[in-house]
Length: 338
Image (cartoon, rainbow, N blue to C red; front, top):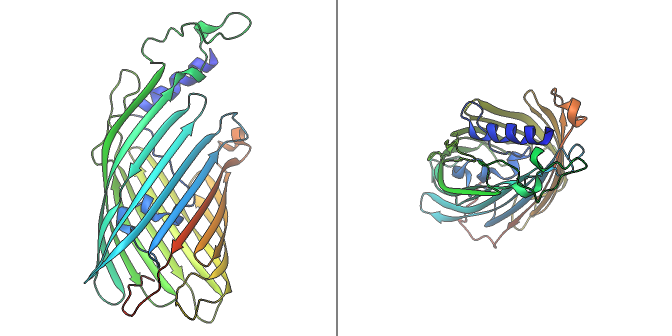
């Protein structure tokens, strides 16, 4: 009976407008910016950027923890007054015994105009495919109780819930981004993006409802000094989706172990970075990242501080990511962002 109650509550939250499910998110949002805003596509030093990450949540509380995977790629084509950025994002989230799954594939594209020597402004769009899936076979119901255990071969008696449910829709997002390169060691970017502009339908039982539009505002900074090995990297993300909000703010502290290459002039140095972030009313986020030239590897840990900590024992989530930037030999006049 208890399992049935949890499942019905879960489906109601997914289906009713007054609750509205919030999109899944990553704590280390700043390491794959194109997943937040398509207008940021191509804003990196190098030619091709590859990225993948994995998040597992509430692993100590549930036998089937919530798992989220993503992968991304982006690059750019130089134009006379800026560049055209393009990429690919893939995302998969799997939750609980029902293997409730959200799949999303998007293709971010932007056009960045160089306003002057230090500033860019870009406009981006991202057509995407959004899909939800549910596998009922992993659940047991009151009608399947035999007195000594659950027999999942018996009918569950739930006429409105299919044994397997899948629903997909085309979706669209768009964004704006302003990037300012203050000096060789200092830059910042400010952006705003809107997702689910088409509001794809996400009906799960007999109720049909459109997914709430999501508005995301972001700030990314990099403030170093040629006389110091320490660089401060403040990052802020504010996301609003229907009645839900997700606000994360904090900073990374990057300590340089090896100077930049004298031959390429790239800013991809060898360094180690530690970060402290706060998700408003929810968690403290700690992370560590190793930057080895074009390769970056990081791990993040969420510590619940909300009332949810009584259930999770303060263990929220673990995240891992790997990114790699491919660089071609640079000729005179080659485009550099940072």
